[in-house]
Image (tube, rainbow, N blue to C red):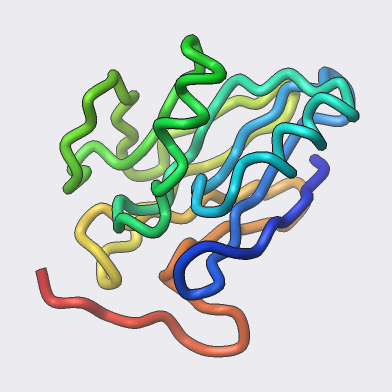
Length: 147
């Protein structure tokens, strides 16, 4: 699995573009930053954007979701089954330890409530990658929020 990170948006969030190096199938994790450089990288790298993975539904982590769906109307959006935000488009509801495939890569969903009711982490065991959203912040612990 390959990863490219993008930083920006509210509270200097991270958005990740991940892809299977063999099939070029790609996903965006947390569409929280300006999408222009992400789309440019996708096109430059000949990637096939097929999924959006949402670690939790706080506004700052899904701020650019509608713009991506506008550009990729058939994209699959995945988030925890108890998502807090009501979406105006279809989302696939994920349960704890549900498997997601991205080309030949396998990603495991881990429900991690605490920061938010619908928080999940996405774990690629083979490459030892985990995407935590706000469960863990860079250089410090996550923040628990009462719901």
